[in-house]
Image 1: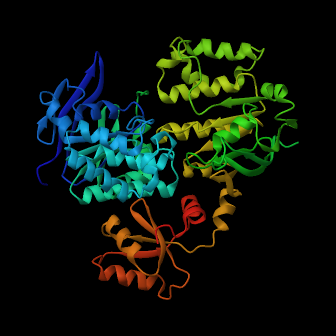
Image 2 (image 1 turned 30 degrees about the vertical axis):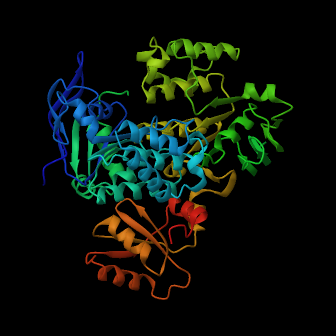
Image 3 (image 1 turned 120 degrees about the vertical axis):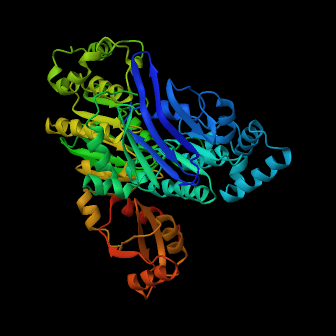
Length: 247
Length: 309
């Protein structure tokens, strides 16, 4: 495996007595699509916040794009993109205003912002919609625009937190086309999802249970190892063993 | 008497916009678990708000247990339970207080109808003193269901109860609905998750305010005449891209690690030619086999056929 872009070594995070993330180990390679699965409350969000430089580990280390999450959080933030269904775009701003705003925050030059805006409008076939407030657009469009905005500065890693909820099967698959295109261009994609068929689109996945990684590997390998047909079956078998519940 | 009858409902927001509901009709029987399945923006919430007497339709009529949704709204409100898509309990009241509040509003007591919620509420009991706002997602949803049930409604409307909930909690939630149905309650549940169709007695697929298909899942799948092939082996995304470029392809979509391929009506080569093409394009391990369609195949075929061709 080439030098990993994301690496966790015995990564642990406690909140008081509660061990949210319990000694997890994983490596994600450049250009890999990595699915980070787990039931609500398994510790995914905490781990993701550490990888994004928003929370320091209690013990162990997390390295993202060569920087340490405990001591170099600011450098990490410059190397990554982040998108979640809950927040990504400003609804009252138009599509182009959103692109300009986020590109500006990421420090792109005026010329780059202009070029990037044109590129996104063309690639997503936005046409007239580019001048529409984001709140007025269908959810599937918002999700694809969010992804384009989260990757406008060509980060080495993009973190996607349940990016596709609520849209129809075709729109959901168009979003995954964007993920695969980005990965082909060398970007690393780290994604959480509750759609188990999407887990099967990932190169590798991990399944978290009670703060620890209960399974890690290629989707096909995990199914074979558990003697089941789908990732959903693996997930249910592992997650049913969980002793803790919650978000 | 039917639990719910919907006849020609139309509803548009604002002028000139596409209607949220465009002529929707169906009927649901007592004890039936009826799924309204469709993506964001399909009209699911509009439909449920009309049926729970919270919104007026522009045209068409609807009755719940024989009561008209406009004229008899007071009777309907006593007879139905409604769990909105957005968490709508009192966040700063405890679990037990929320439940007692909803019972009181309907002029009953928790004790009187406890049997209906017993098996859900036992899971909440350890947290009964906790403010509802501090519960986990799965627990909030269980409490919301208890609050919607505590006045012993005869029809239950659940708007996207499983959105954003992990697969294990979703499974548990549907198992609970199955038990409620057995108690004779008609349940209308909306969801964007196509795989949940298998849990319903009948489903209506909703898209852009229209019912594009309605039946039992087995009948819907059996009636799907489009031959579908599963292509496996090699790199799934590369296979998908190459299949989209294949002249004989009508459309193809990713399905887990496979691609599902539907050939064009005028394709002469059949699956064998498609496979030969893939092997030529650098997928020596590719395989192709006929596959039984899933509900997602049906939806894709009905709504977007050829969009990727």
